Image (tube, rainbow, N blue to C red; front, side):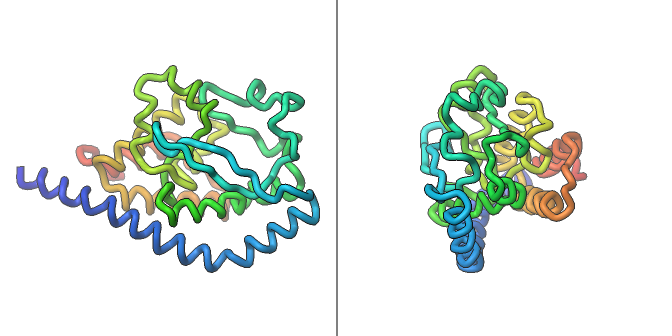
Length: 235
């Protein structure tokens, strides 16, 4: 009983610490990357014209939508019926458009590959609508497809993130059920487990992906998440 109470106290301290790290790190990175924001904005304006930014409404919880800003990486009419992105790439709640798709601009492919496209979301991390690590926020269309799965809402038990477990495994290679399983496990880690340890491991995997292009196998991803939940053996 004493051990259980101790673990509960530790978990209660981890979540505020996660938020404090988000505030400090997002503040620092916004200052560091401010010149990058300016350069990228001018590059998009020069090469592709207006608009420079793409803003979409996405759910960060099952009940809360926020406006998610990104640098525009696609052609202006990418959401039109001309490209039929939903029918081509929507997979039971997850819309994953490969970089080979014709809707991406030249500079857009660079921004997506380097993940510079996501940097504007640091503003949402600082504001408290998102975290560095978590499951990606989803638009209404994705939610409409996702609700067919049992306990789908458990993926929202943790704050939405800029990067997460599905991204380091490789969302294009995951079946929807597999992706939802991993995202639900991360939600369980946030509620019950060692979330700071988990975030550090996912951050290391993200760096490995960006620098070396190395994806994490799904079996190792499951083991990583389970190692951060009391009751499972560590890796």
